Image (cartoon, rainbow, N blue to C red; front, side, top):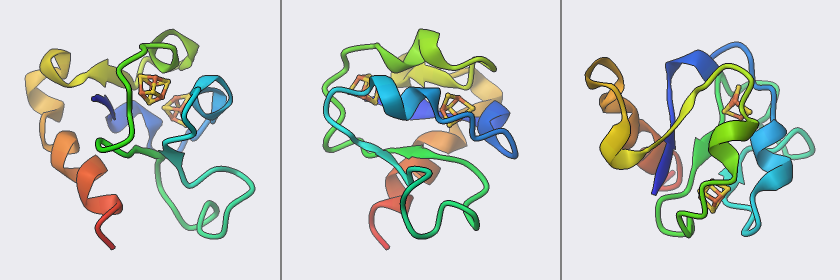
Length: 85
Ligand code: SF4
Ligand code: F3S
């Protein structure tokens, strides 16, 4: 799956939400919790690896799991954990 990393924090541009064909990026601007959430997260069980979100992000926060930079690899777990709450 794709993963949202550090640059999203405090930015939450949400352009990624608009292009995701399976709506697996949360919370969206219309959902409860968006204001409190510091970043958005990709549900790894629902992402179909289409890649549409990656170029849509203005701050390059999104990477395919295997391409996540070393310093941000903990975000793989952070994205997955969001959906286990
Ligand atoms: Fe959605 Fe595609 Fe991005 Fe996965 S890779 S989060 S399916 S836009
Ligand atoms: Fe965040 Fe980029 Fe999406 S800033 S909300 S990952 S478009």
